[in-house]
Image (cartoon, rainbow, N blue to C red; front, side, top):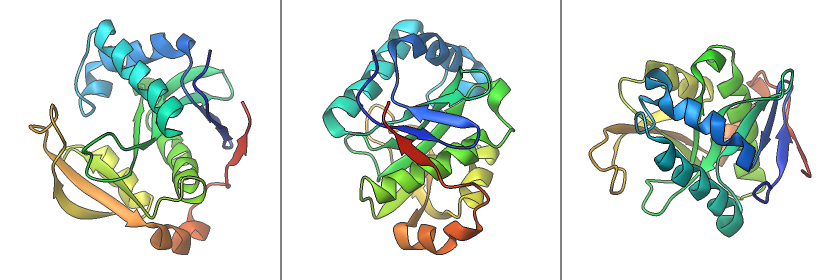
Length: 192
């Protein structure tokens, strides 16, 4: 079973709604202290289950949520990324989180470009943000590479209100103006 929604394809990745079989990958992500550090910290499997089901439910009820990231060459689940805007969130976000062994390969950039294109072109969003912990240097660099700028400190809704974040972002017009200079081939949406 897969949550309803499209599959986006990039040169090296498939981005698709989560499937039940992705649970072990979600658990691996959220049980790795380094990978989970800036996305809520290490969580027990029961909490990970609820989080994954929340994303699947958002696909069913809202028509979007984070995609499962699948490495095309291996078919392996390597993370989650994409549009996310829970109740009370400071804006329409495209976020990312990859397994430690999948980091540093440009996958987050490649997948985020496809997700931002989809958010603007299909969802009709006018702005996209990234909520980033101030000490998360790798995500700040990725936001800059995507063309986003720091808008200032942000406030997440309960129960995350104690987590310090900076809000990075850009408008649809800013993204489109620089899209030609982004070194990733456009993605293609396919039916799953």
